[in-house]
Amino acid sequence: MAAQEIYILGCNRLGEVILIGGSPMIGKSTVSILLAAKLLYPCISTDDIGEILRTISDISPMKDTFYLDYYSNSGKDQLIADIVMYHQRLEKSIYRLIEIHSSWGSPLIIEGWALYPNMIEEIKSDHVFSVWLIAEEDLLKQRMIKSNFYQGANSPEKVIENYLHRSEWHNKTIFEQCKNKNQKFLMINENTKPNEIVTSIYEMINANK
View (cartoon, rainbow, N blue to C red):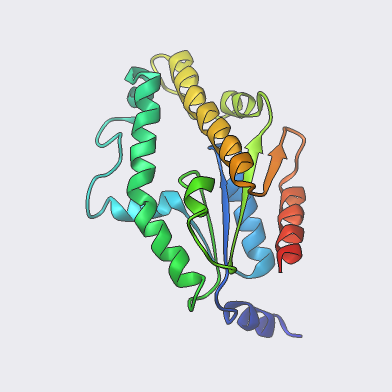
């Protein structure tokens, strides 16, 4: 079968949405891009949805604040409260995308940390598959330290501390919701390769059909 024919078949497959959730720096975007290439599905991030909505209303908790100042000057509880509110503001748009693409629209992969097992539980469709990436101990810390996210901050230690606190809270919240709602998840450590995760998700999807 020619490559063009495969592409057309992939794009004409209707009514399927794959959701990949997890905390920042766990590898959602990389995994989703690789899976999208494998399935010939388009892919969108919940961060993209947020950026689109910001053209209508500035819903970002950072607003006009430089991100390093935001993480340096905000308290840990405030960071968590801000992101919970921000994610709640994205819910209707995320639901609408899922509704369209799981019924009559083209297939779609949605990835992002604005996805939560508790939220997905309310979606009653056999055409929606979700999987969550859960970081094992110290993974998020290792990746945060290796990143250049905090470069240029007046207080790099404070940025790392605050950002990591929120990420670890989010990771724990997702993990607890997965267990409570009996949702599928994969434990990720520093040795887990993106292609291994893609293979596992692909096998889960096929087993679910």
